[in-house]
Image (cartoon, rainbow, N blue to C red; front, side, top):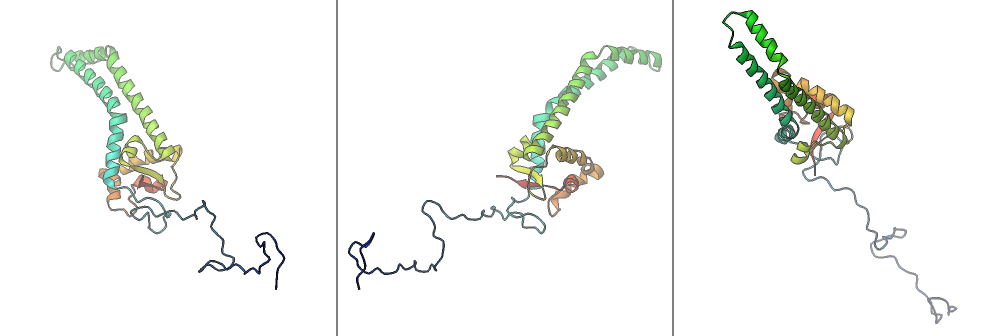
Length: 221
């Protein structure tokens, strides 16, 4: 039996039905060249969270030592200069007061009070140092809170490759919750700083402040 010539069959020969590739059933979608199949995200080295109630595919928790190191780096960057200025101001005031009081007889309270008043009136430079140090400390603290809330990292955390994120979805806290977290660190400092030590044995390595705002410190890439 002959077949009429046509495109792809110039001699009118009978055509055999095309067979699907071996091991591939009819209707199986063919992969187009140049478009590799999408694969799921690989698991993070180290296993990810893996704890019950925690989102999957997230980095592992940061160690207590890395968190301490991040705090030290942040202090050296943002807190060292303000502290030096404030200490210098207080030392100058105390020194001037002692020098003025040394000219007074022992027990002469009126003379001592007059010396202290004179020192206070003449210590404008020392008070300026204290005020500048306090303002720098406030600005630096707000800047650290902003960086942590927006990106999850302060300069210290970035250097130690850790981030503070929301426990629920792994996103940065935002400025407001980062500010609340900083205030809640006051609870961590109570009772011999037990809150700052809590990550050493806590399952999620959280401080009291972390538990209140529902944040976690994790290792970053």
